[in-house]
Image (cartoon, rainbow, N blue to C red; front, side, top):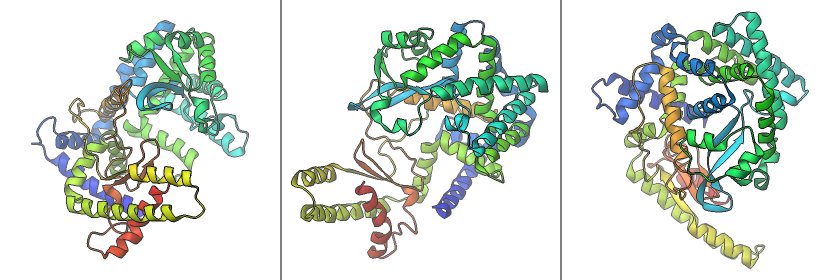
Length: 449
């Protein structure tokens, strides 16, 4: 997997270089957008010259907060641009009606990976907490704060996040779908958080039509409401300033990138920062993944190869059906359901049947961080557009260039992106036995989930 990841990353790198060099690409085309995004990310001189300037309007919005109502409006705005402040909000497949997408609000607002990093007494977590507070202070200094002010601000952030962490559900508790499914109408939501207006928040997110949503972690939101009342506006501004810079530091000038990486070292033990081109490719894969995927399959995955893989799936399905039909240990009812699942399973090979429409996303050769923000806005808006609509069964959970495969139990489909359909997993020129022993193994594994 690592070898193929490196190979595909280098292929995409060359594709993006070529796109960036094509200054005559049609404005608004996929080629123009992926080329300009890459160009802006690689223009290190422009990024360093600009420093924090591209984010100054965002910091000014936070500084202008004068009331709880202003704070709530800013929360909605930060969510729109991809900043995880206070909580998360988006669409999800309804656990009780798998054909419908609903709105959901989840716990969030932490700068460290989860609650354990704030609450556990293990030496490892204590070291990370110390490093995190120093990191926050260092970032505030880069933003222009005096060291003494920055240290105080870091303690404010850590205090707020620790209280949010205490109110958060553990990852283990979240594995129970019943524990994170609490449908509420607007009146119930406002009763749960009387100091936070869901009407105002939903309207600000363009979701005024939403009449109910899944408040996944009610106890967290009760604690969030208590924090709204007890924390001063100045401290909330400090918290929001932190989450804004934390979200976008890696797309800014070198001092911010270096400081951001220092925290990654503390968290993961990573010793060396990736070359800029790899970081930009990774970011662009997240921002324009299916646009890049379309270009990738046009050049590196043929319809003939797709048909070969579909034939392998068909034959494995036939043999698996025979096996299930003759298993002595399986009850008749279980056999009936297993065969039904197998017969209804959809196979999806290479790429989606319907490509994403990126026409509404503006990408240019201006500040890199602003391209990232606009991409975030595009992805967030696309996600929210699903709320209240039937589930789109053509959607893929992985981009075509991904080196992986997956089975989606909620949709009963098998997915093989084009990225994995190359040697050693699949070779269109290899004998059939080789492909059945390689990609056939992957297909069988996913089918039997």
